[in-house]
Length: 282
Image (cartoon, rainbow, N blue to C red; front, side, top):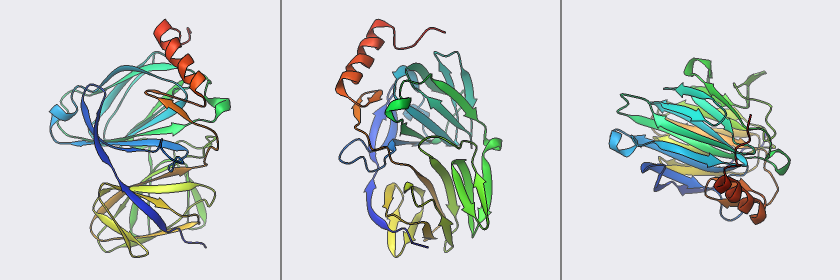
């Protein structure tokens, strides 16, 4: 087994999005796309509804996927495909924007606390203009397991546990996306066997952990070296989001809610949205 080690860490930065929702953001658009195939991670965390109540009114996307996971609170989704759905504590939603979609995500009624995440996951050029799709995953559908002192909620991808492979709700995507919520009690150590071909990182949302004596505190993202085993020791009661996938080795052009491969494709997306043709008629 080749251990994965921390190469470097970076902090999430305060930002706002939607109609003024306060978030902590990790953006991977700059440099060499360090989270590739993931492009961005936003964390919403507040006990004041003023920070999130305005939500994310209708807005467009093209060329990538969004994955939302809620640890507390909930959102209602509506989109131009005619889909609607609500996820609450423990649930997730997976939306493939593909050729174009307009959607909204609004806090559910009587929500006074919110803690959740949204990933932006890139698509390869050959799949960017596929038909859009949406599914919600309720909390009781998420695969859960206990492994070496850790409690794991496996949202997407596969983990090798003992002599068997455990699959999350979403598998088989081109990017082989892995997303897992890992909870480790203070003083405990857990080792995870991870696919060597995937680029993997983790974000600490609670507590602090160590990997080979390298500490990572709450609010920081840790980038990992190549390897097939990750050993984590929790300094205190800790929670982390482990995520990764098969890198997409293609150019990335990004502007606002659109992610394509060239500036020309971005301009076409803007033009289509302005002309009302971003979303194809059913």
